Amino acid sequence: AQSVTQLGSHVSVSEGALVLLRCNYSSSVPPYLFWYVQYPNQGLQLLLKYTSAATLVKGINGFEAEFKKSETSFHLTKPSAHMSDAAEYFCAVSEAGNTGKLIFGQGTTLQVKP
Amino acid sequence: DGGITQSPKYLFRKEGQNVTLSCEQNLNHDAMYWYRQDPGQGLRLIYYSQIVNDFQKGDIAEGYSVSREKKESFPLTVTSAQKNPTAFYLCASSGYGTPQHFGDGTRLSIL
Image (cartoon, rainbow over all chains, first blue to last red; front, side):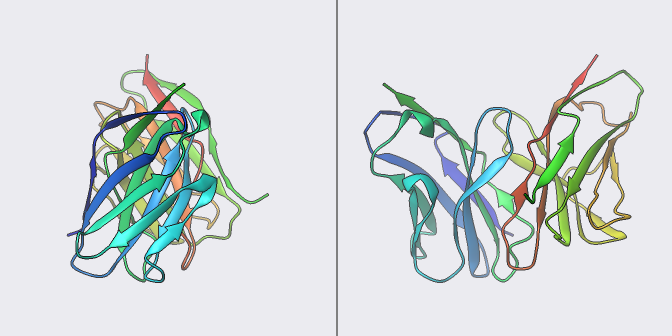
C-alpha cells in the first residue's frame, strides 16, 4: 500500500530564508509524486509533480523538489521565503501511470516571519 | 475559464437532516473525487468516480452517498448517519495523465 509522511506539521522560517518541507513516501510500484499548496478556506493548487522524468522538478512560485529513490523522499524547497508563501502544503503519491487517485500526507503549515 | 465549482461555500445542517453538496466541472475530466478535510488530518477520500454511472467508496464512505449521472456533476450527500459531519469538503477532478484539479471547497457545520 502507498503512504506519505510529511515530517513536521508546522515549519517557521524568516522572510528570505530557505524553505524546506519534508516528504517521504512508501510505494511498491514506481510512484508519481505531487506537492499542493492550500491557502485558508480555499482548495488545493498544484505546485509541482514528478512523473518519472527528471528527478529535479521545478514548479510555480519558485518552488522545486527532488525525487530521491534511495531515500524514498520528495522534499520541497524554495531558496528565499516570501510572506505570501505562508500556507499549508500537502505531499501526495499515486501509482505510476495513474495520476488519478492520490494518497495525501497530513500537511505542513508554513509560517513566514517578517 | 475551465474549473471546478463547489456550492454552497458554507452549509449548515440540522440534526437528522440530509444535505447535498454540489460539484460541477467544465474541464471534460472523466474522474471526480470527494475529500473530507479535518485539521491535522490531511485529506481523506470519501468517494470517487472514474466514469459516468460508476463510483467507488474511498476510505471514509460511511454516512455519505454520491451519484454520477453526468460527466460534469458529482454531488455528495451527507446523510443523517454521518454523526460527525462538521468539516471542509473538497471536490476534485482529473483527466487521463493530468493531476487532480480542486474546487474551492464547502464548509459544513452543524446547527
